[in-house]
Length: 186
Image 1: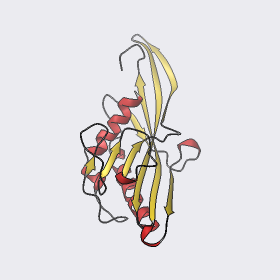
Image 2 (image 1 turned 180 degrees about the vertical axis):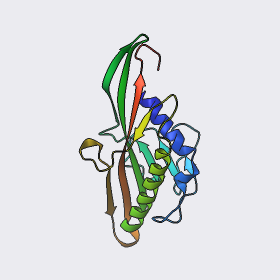
Image 3 (image 1 turned 45 degrees about the vertical axis):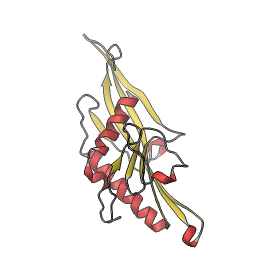
């Protein structure tokens, strides 16, 4: 189910034009969306690139980007509780997917503004998709609650003057509660 749900989350993001829209933090926005892992798209700058793979620190050429996971924390899927019914055992599970949102600019301020805009866009889209038939019955984003599922943001930079490259990063946990019958395919 990890693959099904994480792919569905990225499908929802890819299909919504609000993903690449500008706003108060970054007025310019982006040109569109690329999905290199599932289509023949090639990643490109000035697009929001969606990856079904974990964060790639060397992927500077395809910023802005949203990755499904981080090499140290891709996703977790745990049983919260289970019940027994006439149809068999039903597990109520909690999947936590760490979305990694990356932007790049020539200054830390610009990278931060792009990161904040893209993070806002992702959250607005997903919070309008709380219930998704066939995939989950509850989606939530814990924000700054603490622990491994806390939302974190940072900005880094290298070089100086015209050679400076700054990257804005956000680690946004997306939690999905869903039910699953372990005796069924899926």
